[in-house]
Length: 71
Image (tube, rainbow, N blue to C red; front, top):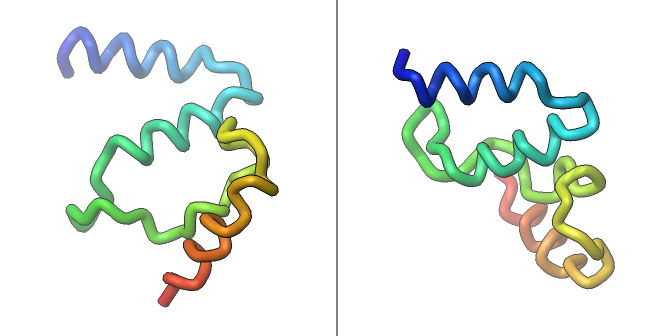
């Protein structure tokens, strides 16, 4: 592993538990899934309470449309 990846691992290990979900959401947005697609298997509304994305009422139509796209 390179030095940057090693540093990333160390920083993640030091995260307080309250910051794990928001950081995980950011990483998921920026990385491809295991099968190479850009979509994660869970809809966007999963984890909304800890996503750090703000007002759920203002985003309700976006969240409900994401749930309708589920297989």
